[in-house]
Amino acid sequence: MTEILQVPVISPKELSKEIAEISNLMTGHDLLFVYQDTINADTSESILSITEIRLKISGANKKTKRKIFNVLVECLQNISNHTEIDATESARRPSVVILGKGENHFFITTGNLIHNSNAEWLKAKIDVLNKLDSMGLKEIYKDTMVNYDFSPKGGAGLGLIDILRKSGNKVQAEFEKINDELSFFTMKAIITTE
Image (cartoon, rainbow, N blue to C red; front, side, top):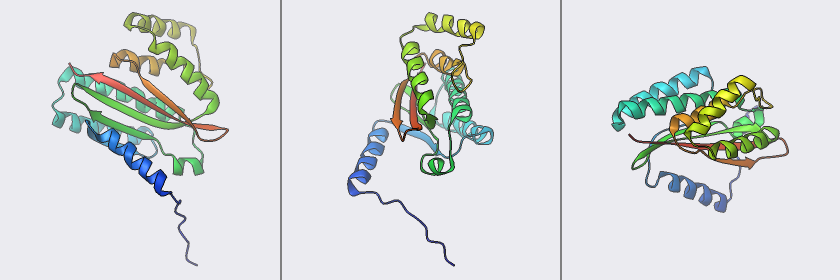
């Protein structure tokens, strides 16, 4: 018996919107790579290897490369450790990592599924962290290490604090509610070139 492939039907309006979003993302940016699939230790290693090659080609200096690697490692660990996946949703909404270059910066954009209860905690944490300067981030990092302010998932938010500290910039975050249980979390970290 032949299996029939089920292809989701996308309306012309939805397709036009997706194309416009991709076009907007690409305008003014040189995308160094885009990865969309499951992220684990093996794929993280491959992404870091590709990043090393792409950064050599991009002409980034040593200090900027180090910052990008530090931020990317934290982003990959966050996705690997905190993605909420079920078989149907992961097929429709795999994790995403994008590395790009603007005029005077690089950016790392990530996306992954999370439980709505974690989305609320994460949004509140990002709002607090984005208001802090470098000294404030250093203090909250030390305080978190001592007091273990754990998230519902078990993490203390140290990776997120590190992303802000190492990038030197605020992060942009969006939460798209998928259903009563899951949201798609998108985060963008910007690393200004040295």
